[in-house]
Image (cartoon, rainbow, N blue to C red):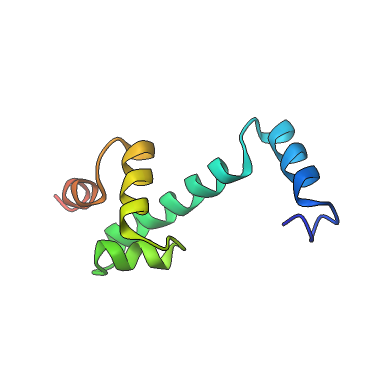
Length: 83
């Protein structure tokens, strides 16, 4: 993103946080988890496969961040959404 904006990564992150009031990594995780929610509801992919589709390298990291942002585990989210 920094390259597209023709900025250094640190300058881009500083500008991004000024405009959005969130660090780049936090915003990116919110977007990824939002996409994961769609995968969990709209596909039959396993939870780890959904995590990989959303660019998470490990299922444990995905589960931790999902739980932190959504307040429930991906498995619980899928169960509640499909009821």
